[in-house]
Length: 102
Image 1 (cartoon, one colour):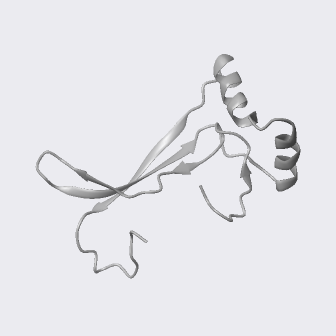
Image 2 (cartoon, helix red, strand yellow):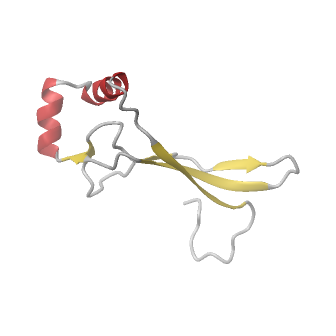
């Protein structure tokens, strides 16, 4: 999800990209830790609305995105997302010119 982005307003949940807000620390059974961020990309493609389109749709139906998801699943059109992770070692990352957690 992007604030103040040029991509517009998500048309519905099926065609919306997303990401976790937090960075998670994952530890394996040997105590080795990595930092991880989660992202998901809709396999249906991304579709957004302009402010004008969103105003028109939401003036008539504030639950349009939920209804779209429900109706598509009911019709057998199951949405799919590609689930992605970004992983980096936990610990000092002084070699980077930026703060990866910022």
